[in-house]
Image (cartoon, rainbow, N blue to C red):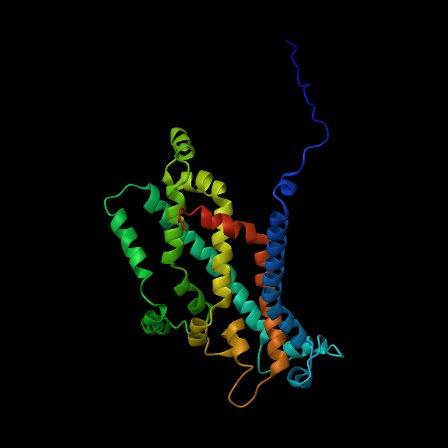
Length: 298
C-alpha cells in the first residue's frame, strides 16, 4: 500500500507587525487617541493664546465686535506702558512675588522635610499622635485662621512687609504629610549603612537622605512655589501698602469699580504666568514622580 507524505511548508518573509494583525480597529483607536489629544491640547492652549493676543492689542481691538486672530497692529509698547504705570508698581510686585516664592518655598521645604523625617524615622511614643494632629489641621479651612493670623502678624508689626507675607506660610501640614509618606518608603539600607559609619539622625538626613531625594524635593518645591506665587487672599490682607503688593494683588488693581484697564491687565497676566510656565516645563517630570513616590494610592 502506497503512502503519501505532505512536504513541509517553509515560511519565509518578514513577520507581520502586531498593529496590522489587529486589523483596522487598532488604527481607528490610535487615530481617536491622537484626535482626543489634539483637542485637549487646543483647549488648554486657548487661554494662553487669548492672553498673548489681547496683551498686544488695544482696548478697541479687544472689545471690537468682529474677531481677528491677531490685531492688524501689534502694540509692543503695552509692555513698556505696564512697567511705567505709576499707579501699579508691577516691577516691585514681581520682585515681591519672587522673594515670597523662593524664600517661602525654601523655608517650607526645610521645616516640612525635617518634620516628615522625624515622624517617619525617629522613634518616639508620641510620633503617631503628632502626625494625627498635623493631619487634623488639614481639615481646618484656611479662611478660619485668617483673623487670628492677622492679629498675630499685626501685633508683631509685620503688616505691609515681606516677613508678614512669608513667615506665616512656612508651616505646611500638607507638605509635612507628603514628606512623612515619602520617608516611610525610603530605603532603610542606606540609613543603616550610615549608622554603621557612625552618623546620627542629623548627619544621616543631610548627607544620605536629602541627596538621594532630590527629585522628590524638586516636585514639592515646584508645587509650593506655584502655590506661593498664585496666593492672593493673604497677600491682599497683609499687603496694605503698594510697596508690598505681590503680582496677584497688582493684577486685581487693573479692575476697579471706576476703571477697567484691559490691555495692561492682559500684559500683566502674560508676564505673571511666564515664571510658572518655565517652572512647569523644566520640572514637570518631577511633579509626576513626586506624587507616585509619596505612597498615596489612587
